[in-house]
Amino acid sequence: MKKTIFTLVVISCCFLHCEKDTALSNGFSKTVGAGGSMARFAIVGNYLYAVDENYLQVFDITNAGAPVSRNKLNVGFEIETIFPFKDKLFIGSTSMIHIFNISDPVNPVKLSEAVSPTVIRRCDPVVAKDTVAYATLRSNGPCGGVQSVLSSIDIRDVTHPVEKSTFVLPEPFGLGYANDVLYVCDGVMGLILFDISDAYHPQQIKYIQDGKYIDVIPYGGVLICWVEGGVIIYDISDNKNPLLLSKIN
Image (tube, rainbow, N blue to C red; front, side, top):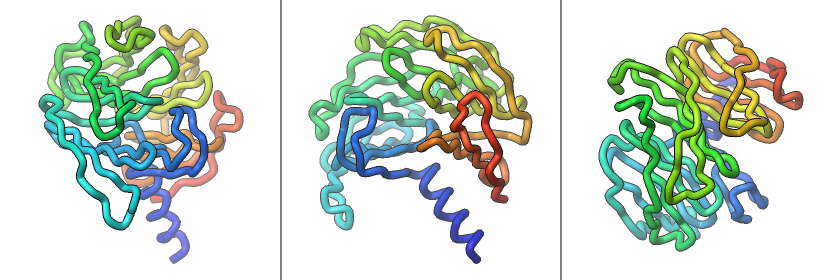
């Protein structure tokens, strides 16, 4: 029974939304989401941002028991993921990454689009870190295309994002980072670790081949991994050498 309860808590926290009442790197001091890169909603301050295939919706959750819809914007088509960073939202679709400013949290303003010249059509979870965004561009399966890559995008000028490099991967899915290490999920290779000391040119360190990895959340020295069939949790106190803590099937 305890294992079942723990499993439900972990899955809900990781791949729906983790909360932490503290000042986080995104610059907001209230409850902020720590969601996976494949999440379809995120919490920033007192607002919940959710995406469906076409729209970005804004909800005021000051009263968590009675959320209020505040805005709905047409983003484009085939919208897949949302990732908050500072006062920005990075929204991934099968054709590009849409970047929104949420300085006015009720009225997101579109700043730009990031398009990879490497892959014409693909699935693209995305995360942002300082002056760089990373996206896994998966072109097999329902996403079409002919090549799958990890893409590094320069966002120093967020109104004109520029792809700096790509790294070919067999079947990439979600991703996340802890300090100078980027963790990338792959359906073939498993969990791939990249050194991102040189932010725009990730270097592969190693990979852990232990099933099909779908998404990850680095959270407080722990790496929580959604894998096919369950959850795997690693201690990443030494972020280049994950230590297996537990597996939950």
